[in-house]
Length: 377
Length: 244
Image: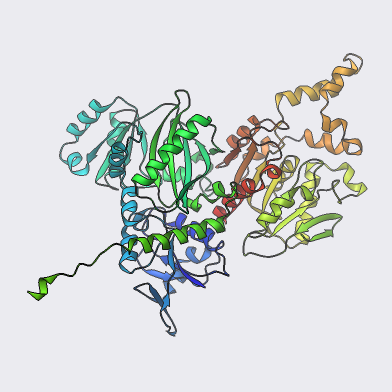
């Protein structure tokens, strides 16, 4: 039996989405093969072992949640839980990460697990950092001839010291409309299309509360958004079905649009944010091939090692496309795009775990310690 | 093999196993039956208790009293049937003509609909449909040549046989006024090659149901659930899991 730590939650605006993915993944583990320990990182940065993770109610009931106080010890590839009495440390085969955004996807948790010598799924420390920092990502894309929309960035410091100067730079960069987004947040949070200088000022004033770097991009009309999920299986890069997401071109989606559009608790006067997607995407074979070729470059240049999703903006009229970003732990692991290809969720779980263990072994083959004569002097 | 039972003159499949999740009830389309959903049931039963009845007048659910059923009667009868199964809160996946009944059931006071999935749902009366209805019913038979009148009648109407009354009541039932009142999570699924119900109806449903999602299956028809059960079930599962 292979012991798996299922890690989820974390400090992120996508905290709740992470719980949903964890729940989906948990129900799909082959229990003849794995013993799964769900470990929730709460918003107070405490790890909590959730032995009975059957419904979401556990996480809705904050009082009950606070009461869960099972001491956890994690060290050098092992984990232990203090349930009443102290139990022995258990060998961990791998940690399965279903964080979305924040420290669980951006390299921090990955560094923690590296230190503890626990193999883990999802991005490595480096690919987590590259995937979370849109500025670094764009530099890597440019260096690798991966098409992206023209962009620039400003810093919080520049904005606070002289916002007029920043506006001048932005106005010189491109005409309106523009897309403004914080550099390091996922889930479209703080992303907005602006049509004039007043809207620009408003969104930057808001976005600098989230991040010290703000990205400004040209707005491209009439593009459709397409995503592919990609996985490495026995050394080969494999693509899922593509998905096309249709949005109102006048709106760049906020977190609320993306995740809370079905929130019926909102009053009817708040309008409808109805979404539309097409599976597989309506693009010709030539464009599909071109995007897949670029996806391979994206995957390798960002040092990806697990299952990812890559998003593109596609101009079908001119047969052109632009790379938006990589998502290193996609929601639901994009399982429904895989199942239609005959790869079941259960197999996806096996593949990413075995990749994690293999990558861990490979990484540890490199010489890390060099005997130094320093202390012998 | 799925378990088949009979209650209230309704023959139905019930996978029974409770997964601590809200059960899923599947309503099939016109002249279809519960067996047409076997592939989907086999996939979804691993995560959800699935109940799939033969709707009254179809499959093994036959009774003379069903021959006068309108959409409201169907909804009421199903509610009664589901109550007999002690179900108070359900998810519904409804195909084609089953969609009208499901939409009507969202206003039920007896059963709470947690999530609604409308797959190529009937219930939106198009301009073409209105014209056909007008030609076949309102214009005196003497004025319209027999051939034109027959062309205006749909295949389902011609083949309805003893179910003509049920058919006419169904196709004249417009769900539009109910859509705005739907307050459960709703997913609309449509095959873009659907030749039975045009895809524009998907947009009408999506625009009129608050906060709904539309998923178009590219390259699939009115029977996408049979053409690619894995894809279809994956889309359904992803939606239900999110709302669980």
